Length: 134
Image 1 (cartoon, one colour):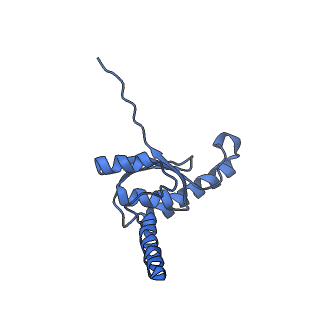
Image 2 (cartoon, rainbow, N blue to C red):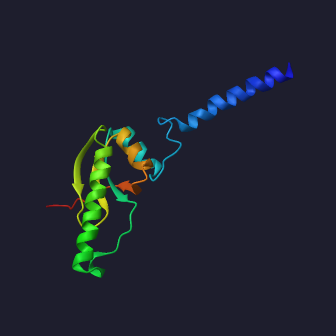
Image 3 (cartoon, rainbow, N blue to C red):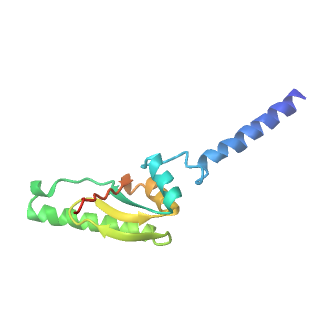
């Protein structure tokens, strides 16, 4: 009888543990802050800045040839990321040419991808600044 209870408890633990990997649970935020998922849940979509996982040197420290090679590497990262996001709902893509970043509007599914892909090292909320006009 004790063995049966132990088996039942083990099964319950395994089943409840599987929820940790459930994408809707959001217990694993990857490269993202929990607040991004909360914002997407509230608004349906959010604009983010994704920074690529790649070596980067500020352009002013590079020769013209090195600058061009780095820009080509950034363009390739844009292409790779966007091809992976093809089936997901995205909007308002703004590619940076000189820095390894992309600004993009995402929903829950595309945000989940950005937060877990090895192509991206950081995802943060795009902040827009409003000025008071009189």
